[in-house]
Length: 150
Image 1: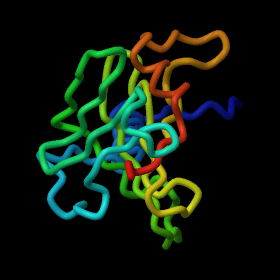
Image 2: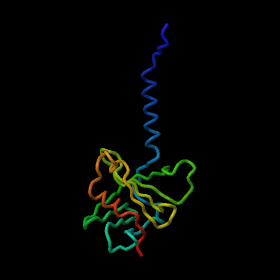
Image 3: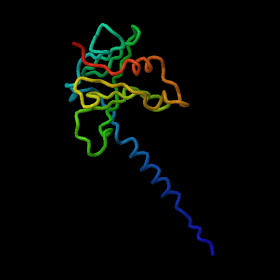
């Protein structure tokens, strides 16, 4: 007698959907940055706003200044649970952009538990053997860490 069991395809679909929802539940699109006023300001390498790349944070979102060009992210995703369920530090994480590969970069405010420090890292792109980061995103990663301008 065979030990083969028939699994209900509807149950498999429900499990897959549940896993998908758990994976994306940690990031929530925000319409603006109200409530994150402590992050507002201008950030640059070494806190020198005469240098690029620069990141400007205000209630409308993030503005990235790279090689004289500006790029605005107005519907970022706040990764509220990025630090894990028991995280109680001061860091705040955002995905400013989404594309076909996912989230190319991650912004970590108060990076390393240091207020005023912004870390920018590659996330779903820019890893060995994977999709390359766009030049503007690579420039932001290369300029990291940033500090609030003096």
